[in-house]
Image (cartoon, rainbow, N blue to C red; front, side, top):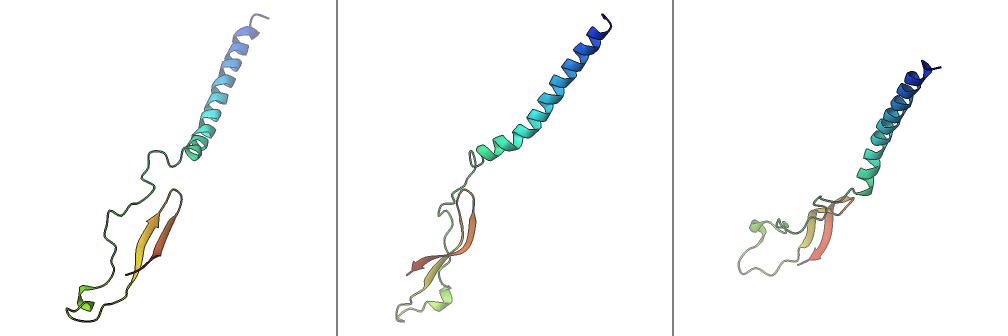
Length: 89
């Protein structure tokens, strides 16, 4: 009966380590899902100019132009949208 004790201890220890390893592997994606946007630049501000019209289209003394303003890209926490209409000038 005393020969079974070291084997049982080894099996208990191996089971605990195996369970812990499986739990850690499954916990990593779960934690990443829960805290996804933390620490990332998720909202892009207007740090870059938005192209409106070519300089060649604007002539001194000509009547004013109405141009549609479209942002090339807009991002928020989970999505990225391209060619977003912003209005007119």
